[in-house]
Image (cartoon, rainbow over the protein chains, first blue to last red):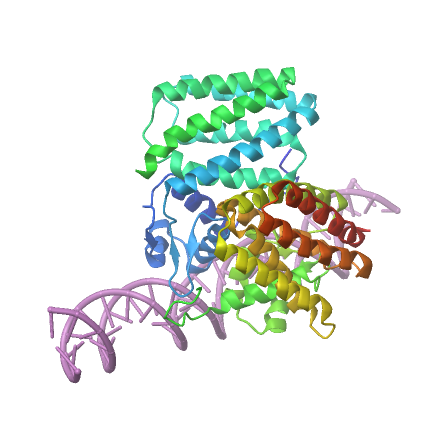
Length: 220
Length: 220
DNA sequence: TGTTTCTAAAAAATCGATTTTTTAATAATA
DNA sequence: TATTATTAAAAAATCGATTTTTTAGAAACA
């Protein structure tokens, strides 16, 4: 599906981008922290050029701040910004999920069912590393909206998820909320297959608001 | 306002970014064209490192496409993508302008009035270079939405304007449509000051649809 | 004491050269 | 003739060294 016949070589720049992105989302760096480039160089064992290219990309996508002649800095967290992100997520994801239900075909249905199932299994499995659950979770939401037919909407929502996760992943776990959120994922699959746009739109809103309650703890 | 007491030195990377961005928006490169990095190097007379950093940033913001080990390419134009951009612009800018009218203060009113006036004067002046009009036009729309209180919304709208301009600036001029669009800018100021959200929201929609008719000519 | 000026160290940005990968042209094979 | 290897040239990516700018601390000054 994604793989062409050619193996497709990766670049060091791309690899360090992926690693840095993960570490930034997971809060390995303090919010507001200045990134010392020569430290990163030794820490990740990469050359200066690929590292700087990765940092430039991360800054362009909003995961870092760049200031001329004084390098890169991890953006601060603020309640105000989180609210902004949450409000936009609700608007955009409600639009997207509505269109996704209108346009989704049989292939989308089965991909959604599969993604939902994997996520459900992962929620039960206590031995699974957190980053694997995170990947399945991201994938589920991605598949849900994938049939909305708007690449720019998907792109923006993806960027908002990245920003949201900077907050959420730093917040302490809350098992009660977690189980409600897991149930909501199941319900989403149900409503999606039933093409109940009103129900799923409302549910998406609640899902975002509930997870934002957890995320909120990271800015105080 | 924007200037600190310190003069703030620029970087070559930042300068080449600005120049390349302008040239990409203005259609100096063909859509789909592969960018030969060593050509750019001599063409713009810059070193490899700042050039590559600029290209990486442009790719992250969607003005270029990046493919591992085979450099950078100017994205193709398609009617389908333009429609996507237009539909999202309408949704987001209607939201933003509504909030802008709710939150705009006296300072915003005067900045909007000033930006509208400068744009009107520029429309009449036939000797004004096109890129100066473009700057005033961008600035007007930026000011109009600046009081909407959502930095992420502004960011996404800015990105959509960039993408939209890739189409619009390649399309042939249409003086009739142009004058209607100019009148709409005037009306926007009027409705904004009157805080007539229903009227301005409708007008914004018409403005985007009308300018998209012009832009459409660039993909056939 | 508080401000400004100077300066050495640190950090960021840039350069030129090298390595790696892709591309495109040619030859070999079925 | 069509497909697969081969390989030399071109392009992309990376490296290590150099230049430029910022930063932080000491000294001079008011």
